[in-house]
Image (tube, rainbow over all chains, first blue to last red; front, side):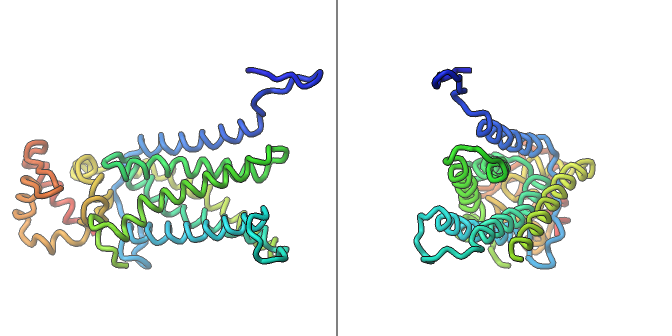
Length: 193
Length: 108
């Protein structure tokens, strides 16, 4: 490992904490990718019919809810970081609201991810599906990195915004390659709920 | 108070995530495919979805019987293909095509 001399002490060029959390996230992404690739898709429907008319309708709905919650979470984060000036006085519950929206967004993605991983597996039949499969794995790795970044102290200031941005970007790509396609494409099945 | 509620929800979310992982790996053994499902998975699922709910191609589950009341018409369609749907007469045997067609008609 390369090192930079600062005074008498030797400081590693790459701080181990950020590297550690990124590696942990990468490991989760790889693990999910391997599972999705190696697992035999069961091609079964899951019992979501009591609310939605089909599995794809369920996935499109929940992914849309997750993206909306994530947008709220990003807006709250921007206010927490002072990038937004409204409301003028920061309410004391803003940080907790940020945590809550993020947690709910994550929870909402779980049934979708379960159906994708267990029933469909990793697929590369088209560019859209391939990107969706890859980014789906990246999303959960990035999410693990984000949670670790929140919990660990002493990380560089850029860590949390960068990782949070990565999680949000991954979720938006997942939304664009699934829900938005489902709602707008003429190739998609009938989006009747 | 709100902070406490959020913490409880976070703990429940963590439990949900653990449940998610347990379900993924715990159900692994239940993923044995029947021969017809295996043919479907290998040739159809990437477009029509693993559950026949649709994807790049249209939904099959619950609609193919209505569209093709006569199974022979559906078999002919799968053999010959049309538009973006490729024909499978060159890659699947007659038995496999019949099996997979019957399988799609069983999806609800």
